[in-house]
Length: 126
Image 1: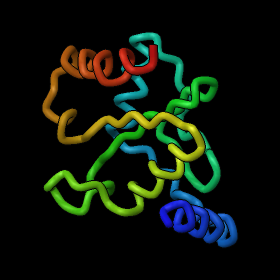
Image 2 (image 1 turned 90 degrees about the vertical axis):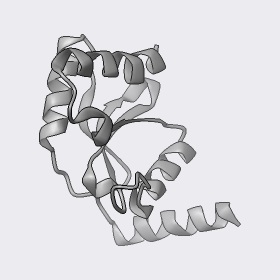
Image 3 (image 1 turned 135 degrees about the horizontal axis):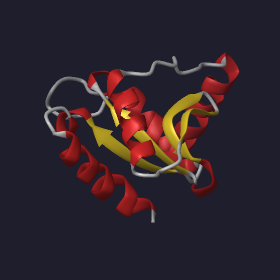
């Protein structure tokens, strides 16, 4: 049943040519700068099907998504349906999805942000 719903959603997205809106947030710009500083070469705003990935390591099929306010229903930490579907489809396409959560990021110093990226991104892609 789950496979049928996935296939149905994929066909609707394909047929309607639904695209994600490309928006680069301040947090994404900040993360891109830190990725460069720590030597992680990522593609920004990478297109895959109807989706735009915040950051991608194409050869490894790893995407790094920044979950800001628009990815949640409210501040209880529950990811919304649009984001859940995106991650589900990416997983079906054999992409590994890593996330950077705004609430974990916002009040950190630069040094702590680098440590966060090392733990939550670098260690998971090596």
